[in-house]
Image 1 (cartoon, rainbow, N blue to C red):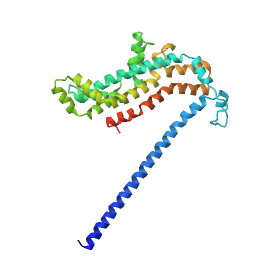
Image 2 (image 1 turned 180 degrees about the horizontal axis):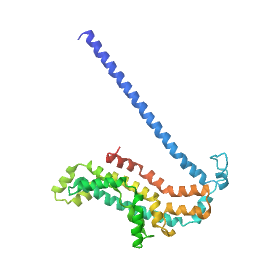
Image 3 (image 1 turned 60 degrees about the vertical axis):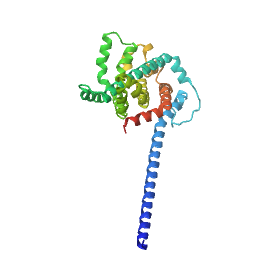
Image 4 (image 1 turned 90 degrees about the horizontal axis):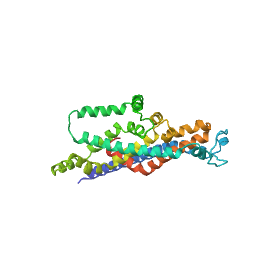
Length: 296
């Protein structure tokens, strides 16, 4: 091999090595930039949470001092004790837990079956039904509240668990998530089971659903959080204090005891605390579930 050929190969190798180093440098810069943006956003979201905690532990005069500061000159739990003494907060927690759990179970059960049928079965009107479900994602739930309220009022179901639970179960977005997840599963598993004599129900229950655990976990967490935070429908459907949920019930404490900053922040902390625990325990399932659907 000639000297020119060897020199040409060496130059090409150096050029390729330089290109790789340049590409690696850009990748590292991009990852660091993304990490910095994520950290900045996390800190930005933590500021109101920290402010709520700080204010809830202050005496009321300290919450209106100027200039504003984070220092707690007199640590007190009076705002929390007022929330518990001036309300039936234990009952509201129970109501929210009952409604949240039942709505979550029914939503996962109904949406997973609908998603499996749309993904694996052929039937008349399938495309039209899927379009209607997608359209349901874009319809604001507030548009249906007045008709729903009148229907439940007509059958004397206001201030019952039925009124709090049933209108919150339909979830088009959950059907869409399950369909996308089932679309990503190998159809050969279902075909093999069908050849062995398994019914569609058996395929769904023993094959599709166990493989969809990440989607089940993600939908369950999002549904529970949305149901727990829902204010407007429980506000209409539960006028009796014994049937109120946490968001509605805590909203009634403030007018009865006077509007105070510490009490407002204590109510916000009490209402959000279970959701923080749910996210901390289920963050991995949320990521896996969303990633499994192919949504980006």
